[in-house]
Length: 386
Image 1 (cartoon, rainbow, N blue to C red):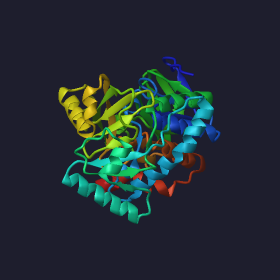
Image 2: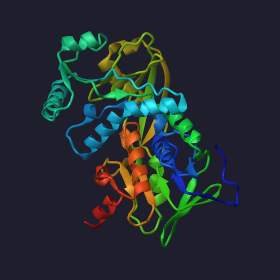
Image 3: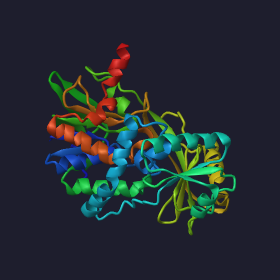
């Protein structure tokens, strides 16, 4: 169901979720499955139209981690939820999100790269994690198209990928079948905060009264908290990432392949994604010649055969980054029943199942999960007092 709030009227809900990206949709789905009713998801454009659809869909916490901190443990737990999560979404929505268990390769092309992956192999092996060290011969047996300049590689068999745009579609359908409303093309302009806590939101189409609000609108979170009383301002900035898409049929790689400078993501339909950039350009989603050139150069370093592939698409998305690079998840102590689920930065797809489950569980039971202790919104208030 997708309808607007009639102008000048007040709509009532039990829960309002601001943002219909994968995080907001996952929370809505989990709340509905736990028995909550009258859930309204308010989306300024359409479901998943921002970072969720612009992502690469990698589920690769081990490939990117330098240590086993609280974020790493949260990310690995979420990755390990994906097989059951994907199966449940297929059952609910009849949409296959294409969870691909092939694994991920991390390839070194310089002495510095080689030292980096040796360090990663050492600490992950000591921690009992699944990681394999590959010789160049073993690497080329797995992926013959990898550049002859490769010096070494790691294989992470548990790091996988999904088709993130199908994930958006599956979550959207599941949420709608659960009875929640998705209001497309409606902007939440302000939070309505009273003496006893959150009272709802004011939107471009009218007011929605609700005793509980979850702010999950990605790079736009800070625009809602800038003038909100009784709470610290949560600073989440947009970080632009450009992506390229090549036609590779037959495929030239089977695994997700990382280097320290770029990555390749093969899709089941013959597309090959290459990324990405990290740019502080505000809310500008423009593609740039320098960004395209940089991604292309890094992709060619991994697999020179990309130079023969037709470029069929390109786009840019805005990753939501908090000041400390960590997600912002949980209830604000300053405002009762106001929750946040934002700042997932480069890991929104990866953290989708666990964010939905833990936020919904906290809302329904009132018991915060220890897994979220390092990611609560009030950590910014503590930092401000120091």
